[in-house]
Length: 110
Length: 151
Image 1: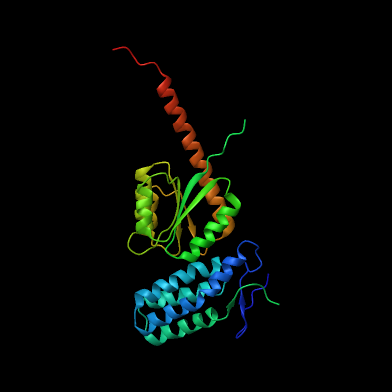
Image 2: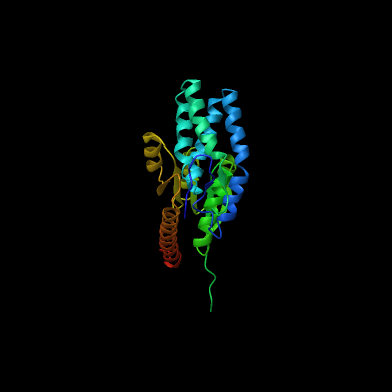
């Protein structure tokens, strides 16, 4: 199973070809725009608690769903929000997370 | 004569619906002959479900807003001491983990979840539960069949 993490390339789940779990991965990917919007909205409104919570969920679910790169990036956002780091620090780690979030794909690479 | 196997009731609680869907599917496809899975994403509803009885294995996230996994653990153990409680945790504090241990948690599972480890822990919880239920039933049977002492 290949996990692609190169910049601007799609990020595939290690569970993408699982006969039972592939459908759940697809659902997880379909819901990703809502998660991205929730993270962005929490940041824009300086709602650290919501940002921390949304990042916490991504941290737990990302790698569980086979999207391994999501977990450490989500952890960085969660901890930055929890520690009330300067806005520019949070923006930086959030952008890294959102970049990977926007590239997750269901299925397997061609 | 065939005897229908008793399925233990496993309540899975996580406030992230995507985690609930994934874990329920992983457990159901491998241990569906041992457990009947109920899922909830609202910990307050989970508390009511536990208090209504019949939850034999509780698999719950530890960190949830409002009612957390520790509250569910304490409720489950006070309802039925033999209920097996498995906690899902990311980066819980030492205090929270110690309190979970002291409150009777069976085991814990780190997030992100490793599927093999999840199945191993649920399977162990099922076996432990079966043994407790068997010995308790046997004790109850003996008590009922013992002659009542004459006054």
